[in-house]
Structures are given as structure tokens and as C-alpha cells.
Image 1: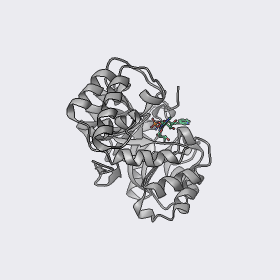
Image 2: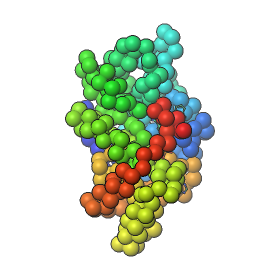
Image 3: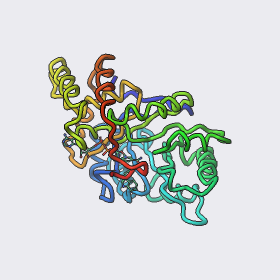
Image 4: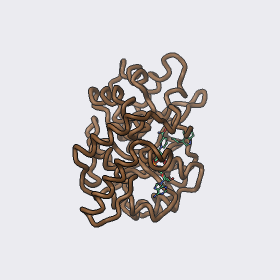
Length: 290
Ligand SMILES: NC(=O)C1=CN([C@@H]2O[C@H](COP(=O)(O)OP(=O)(O)OC[C@H]3O[C@@H](n4cnc5c(N)ncnc54)[C@H](O)[C@@H]3O)[C@@H](O)[C@H]2O)C=CC1
Ligand SMILES: O=CCc1c[nH]c2ccccc12
């Protein structure tokens, strides 16, 4: 129920609902939206070096006046220039963010590190920045099973999360990866979660989402939207949900949705089943919108 924190395999926790500074805010000044998101009640902020707005993510945090200890901040390593270490790259992000540490540091895109053994060596350096306290938790993004296997071989720390595109139209294709996560204690964190509603309307989950949204609207007396049903579908599965918006009014809608009761087992199964009828990705494995 609600925005309950999810336990990570290193003993830390991550708030279930996150506010992202990619997609809608990519390369934009995120200061006002980040401050508004925190003031509205978000405590989990998702950033990345490649979003080119870590400075305004940091400025938004300062403007919110929220104590650092009450926030959970993620950033992601995009690439390493020749001769630069992971520590130096993270220290650069921390300087830009005006933070002493991030709560979560992710390898953004495995295909950016294609040289033999490179991913493994990057992960070793991730283990070091966690030990030094520059990142409280470390993880990956857009990793497939083969990428996870590569870094797990010789790892002393298992990634805490794998952040990836997840919604009903990738549900079936993602089963082996999510089983791998479960076996290794890796938390699944999603982006693109509302894609069936806002990026590919007209698919087989639409009638199922409409019917559940109507049921929830009746029983709670609140207007429940189809995108919010998808948030609850992921919460039921224990998947961290990262969303975003550039419109301040939607922040409260997301937080209201987080306060809704759980879907029933039958509703979750109906979304799984309808989603399995169509396979559609909206982001390349690079995380870039298609
Ligand atoms: N690790 C990676 O490679 C990636 C990470 N991300 C992260 O995930 C975050 C979440 O991004 P998304 O996937 O875009 O989230 P999402 O799938 O929840 O979509 C959010 C978008 O849905 C639309 N939307 C929401 N409510 C609406 C409404 N009532 N009416 C009309 N449109 C509405 C808006 O365009 C909004 O920007 C990003 O900001 C970023 O931080 C996103 C993509 C890739
Ligand atoms: O993180 C995913 C979204 C995104 C927005 N811009 C870029 C550029 C390069 C990789 C991913 C992204």
C-alpha cells in the first residue's frame, strides 16, 4: 500500500515511487519541477549524467529546503572519457548536484562499455565508490541477463537494482529477466511504465485498464486514471516505479494514485494476460525513446 519503501539487497531502502528528470525534462532546467515534486511529497528523484540537468536537479533539491537525509537521489554513469575513473566521474556528478553522496548510482547503458572486460572493470569501480560512501547503493540499468552475468562473475556486490522499461507490453518478454532478478535479489525498477496509455493507446490492455479505473473510482470516490492503474500493477509486483511530468498539476495526481488501495490478484492477472497479446517497446535497449 501507498509509497512504502522497498528493501534493497544491501540493507538500504528505496521509495517505491520516483520522480524522473529524463524524458519530459531531458536537457531542460528541472529546478522548479524538482522543487515542486519534493514539496508535493516525492522523496525519490531519478537523474542521470546524460540528461544534462544534474545542476538543476541539485538546485531543485536546495530550493525545496528538504533535509538531504529525507531524500533518495539517483544518478547514472553514461560514459567514461579516456583516463577518467568511475570515482572521478561520480565526483563530477556530485559537484554538479551539490551533494556529498548519491543514494543510488547506476550504469546507465551496458552497450556504452563494449570493450572486452570493460563492464566487469566498471562494476569493480562501482563496488569501490559504494565502499567509500560516495554512493549508498549501486546498480545497473537496461541490463539483459547476459550483461548481469558478466558483472556478477567476480563481483563482491550484487547490483541492488536494474532499471528498465517495464509495462504490460513487455511483461511476457521480461519474464526470464525478472526471474533472474528474483534469484539474485535484484530489485526491478521501471521507467516507461505508463507507455501503454500515453505512447501506444489502442492496444489490448486498454479495456482492462478502463474497467479497473472505473471500479477504483467507484469504490474510492476519486477519479482514477488508466495510467494510475499501471502504477498499481507494478506496485503489486514489488517493482519500483519512476515516472515524470513537466506539468505541476500531475504531481498531486501521481501521489494520490500512490495512496490508492492495491489491485486484486485477478485484476493483476487480467492486465498480465491482455499485455501478453502485444509486444511493444518504446525505448531502445539504450534507454533512448524509439
Ligand atoms: N534508465 C533509462 O534508460 C531511462 C530512465 N528513464 C527515467 O524514468 C523517468 C520516467 O519517465 P517516463 O518513462 O517518461 O515515465 P512514464 O511512462 O510514467 O510517462 C510519463 C509521461 O506520461 C505522460 N502523461 C502522464 N500523465 C498524463 C496525462 N494525464 N495526460 C497526458 N499525458 C500524461 C507525460 O508525457 C509524462 O511525461 C524519466 O524521467 C527518467 O528519469 C526514462 C527512460 C529511460
Ligand atoms: O534515460 C533515458 C532517457 C534518455 C533521455 N535522453 C537520453 C539520452 C541518451 C540515453 C538515454 C536518454
